[in-house]
Length: 297
Image (cartoon, rainbow, N blue to C red; front, side):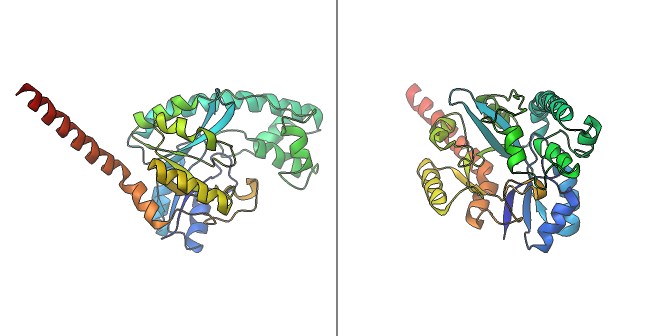
């Protein structure tokens, strides 16, 4: 069974619609995917309905943006199988508002620098819950200023090191809050793309905060990285997942759906994780009650 547990659609920063994504999965022999749009839960329900039509299993998921102020790093947390996903809506909405403020400022700067209108840029984000850098670049492609999403123009506009950047910072929630909210929703928290975000040194800290696992298989991870991350997970008894981080045209690299997947053994552990935790909790409660009774005697 092939399970790609990290996919994006037009609802966030992907270029492909939900049904098209599912059709690609079916035709690629991928029978399980998770739609993990950034700070957006809207794709799961529709995805599950469409998935049944094409015999593709859709695992409920979302990718939540966070910041680790102490480490000065961006963090992305994948949440899977939340029992009460509506509890994450407030977090998603707050991040969405902050991202829209940032996007508005960047869009105005682009419109003042190039002969394109804000409406033209916004039209490229049609169907998305927000305006992402990829949408701005797509508009500049259509206006003839570049022939690629990522390249010299992208670096000039969005690299922090560029003197001509148009960046407007987004205020993301702290990783501590994101992990807490995921567990309040009874979801499973997985650290996404730790190599790309340079989060490996912080894994121990996040485990103490309740992190359940790590995305080991990701396009940014080399074979050596995968071995290292798998070793950390084994030592810390963490879940291991994998996903392509598929974004279609909007991806940073050429990635096909299913190019990174979660091995069957680890997928089964993910799916049985909450039940196992409940059993362990009940056992601990019984043992604590037994000790309390023995103490009375």
